[in-house]
Length: 241
Image (tube, rainbow, N blue to C red; front, side):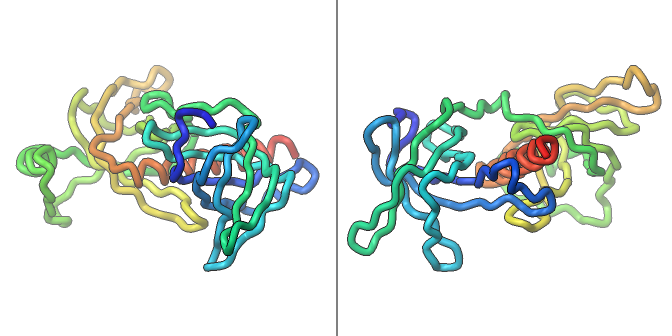
């Protein structure tokens, strides 16, 4: 077993459909499992997933895109089910890692092209001081000054977008945008730091902005990464069919 994977790590498995059977209108199927033990020949034993309190017996020979949530970070590879077992009342499966295990680096997250409207506002003064100190701050919603923008791309580390406003490098923002997670649309409220704000070379009335997420909890980052992986797989399926 790869040393970056440990017993107890969560695994997210997304079914890799065969080219002939892919339905472009059908949402991909995702299962949650857990590493139970190492197995011979670069394989691991994992818990058979459950949905709605019922065991889902994955078939031997099925392949999945696997994301491991390890102490050392997020790791992604392809796996194949090579065995199914029952020990006592416990169902498990044997998974073979069939591609290199790649770490998703903090500054090297997969970047998804995504043209969608977003909005943001500058955080400053008492609110910024409270957030920097790790304290909750509840602003008067009626006084907030939101700015409209268009997202260009999204990663687990930040966003690139365009807007009609020149912003200062180093300012902090709250950004709002939506993602699809577990077949539902979720609105993301995230803090970010402005890395760059430059006039667009092709349209001088707008500015290219790049921000890095700031003080984002791992749970929300994992949701964004899952959204990106899912969208990338959907697009690859559409291209191949």
